[in-house]
Amino acid sequence: MWNSRIARANKRCLHRLLCAAVGLLTAFGLASVASASVLAKVDGQAVHQLTVDVMLQMAQQQDAGATKAAVLEEIISNRSLVRVAQKRFANLDLQAGAKRVGFDPAVAADDQLAAALRSAYLQPLEAGLKVLPGASLQGKVSAEYPVTEQDWKKLLGADDKLIVEYRWNEAQLKTAQQIIVLRSSLAPGGVITLADVYQRQNVQGRVELFARNQAFVRQQAMLYLSQRYVQDWAEQRFGSAAVADLRQALQEQNQVRALLALHGIGADIDAESPVLNSLAKQVKAAEIQSYYRQHKEEFKRIAAIRARHIRVADQATAERIVQEARRGQDFAALARQWSIAPDAASGGDLGEIRHQGQLSWLQELAMMQEPGQVSPPFRAAVGPHEPAYWEVILVSQRQDGYQPADSESVRYLASRAIAQEKAVQQIRQLQRSARQAAKVEYLTPGSTT
Figure 1 (cartoon, rainbow, N blue to C red):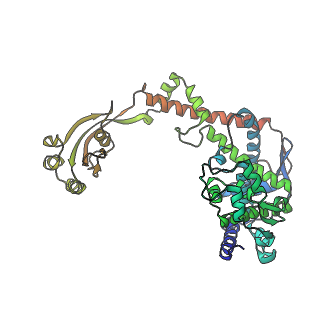
Figure 2: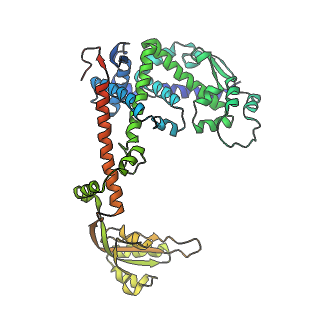
Figure 3: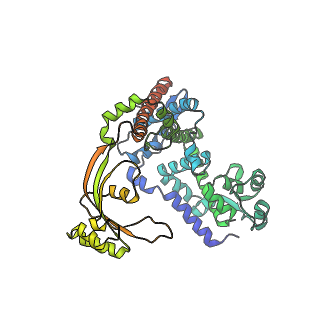
């Protein structure tokens, strides 16, 4: 039998899951439930009213001024762009985002679909739950079966077995498909198996399964059932074609974002991007020099400084020196009094430090300080068997300059920036050509922008 306390906790968890979007409804004021009408067709494929209504609410979370017409155009643009991109970038993975966090892309799409529908239609979804036996999702469960110790042993072997990888092989999956966790008319085939639970997990979830966590198995089975309830409700309300269209539109939105990321768009110029890398390699020297002249301020740097330092053997002394220097005590005099460095007699004078060649740790640290401000104490980077010491630094002068036009840093930064500009142009052109090539029919007056 299941532990009743765990059952109550899981019931609360499911309720919170269905109530998570209540704030959104308050903010946006859900209008009448969307009809199953078709607003447009892209190369003969319908764009449903449901898709536009749900994605409009999602857009308004980011921009309260988002309009229905603009959302419809984005859906059409995404659909046409993805079709072209899948051919042009067949060797690039537009599902990489989902795979990086360990979820199967199809599972991630199902989760996103259910979350979007919950966000838009929480009140009618909750009303549907209230008419079930027990006024909860449990009313759709006809039977539950805890995984027995014998089942776990047959599936995973002895519980002290060394785990090399948290992944089931084909034989284990076949075994798990025979282990029924619960029965429900909402589940595909009427049952949810341990294999169904496993296939919906990332690596953290699989760790729980290898730990034979019974409560986790039931929680995940019920979460899956909750998702099935939402999808079943939507299909009955709007039709399976409309729900499938919404799912596809959400996937296409993700794929377009992935396509932009592959081009380094919306990321730092240092971000890893195969397209950006390729474009950067094609940038010519003349382009780099032109960019340097037009964006010279981007290559501004500290050319040289004059600085002094005080070196002491403990942090308490260093902090006391900082306080005295900040109260107006002469820094050079303090260095002559307290510093244990060889240059103490010269007031800790580091001379002129120029931004060239290999700088020492202390010189690098001095370069990072603001002129005229006594630094906090810094513990020196010493080896494990070397005595520790602390440095206090004062930069008296700073001379700014520019990185040399023919330097490697200029070449790298300029080529990446130029490549990013070209990537944006490439995507815009791809969007325009894909949109122009698509056959779009608007079926409802006022749908176009």
